[in-house]
Structure formats: C-alpha cells, structure tokens
Image (cartoon, helix red, strand yellow):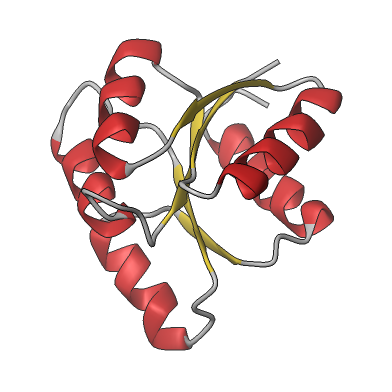
Length: 125
C-alpha cells in the first residue's frame, strides 16, 4: 500500500487521520510542522503528502514550495488540508504547488477519493 506523509501540527487531528488511513492499509509517516515535513519527505520518499497549511515554524505553503523546488521531491503529489474554504485559499494552495485541496473538518470519503486520484495519476494506486 502507498506511503503517506501526514504533515499536521494538531495532535488530535494527526492521530485520528493517521489511524483511519492505517486501517485502510496505508503506511503513514508524520511530521508536526512544515520544516519537519520537508525533511521527512526527503528522507522517507512518500507516495503522497497530506499538508496542513496552517503550521508552525514553516507553514504549509512554504513547505510545499520547498518540496516542489527540490528535484528529489517535486514529483510527490501534495494535497492541501485547510480550514480555509474560500476559492482564493484553494488558488493560493495551488499557486504554492499543491496538486489538490481539501477542507477541514476532513470528510474521509472525499479525501480518500482525492488521494486515490493523485496516486493513480502517479501509477501508485
């Protein structure tokens, strides 16, 4: 099953989402802030990244820009996760390099569909 990097600073959200993904067979590695997310992506080579956009130290927009600028991680799909649901927020995430966008609170069925779409596009579904 694909390896997912979950970059989320909220411990409850991180725990809940990681357990739900693991129950569906995904391998989940986690990071608590954007800087750690970049480091984990480089070290663990995940198949997909779920990126909270409101993170401490380095926010999700900057972390995504760094990942997309690095040839080693540029091809990893990033799905932005944010409580900001305005169309301008989605455009801001896409401008930073995110491949898709989903809003919080997480609706698991919708998120799984987006994840499968990105993984299939990469030939990793």
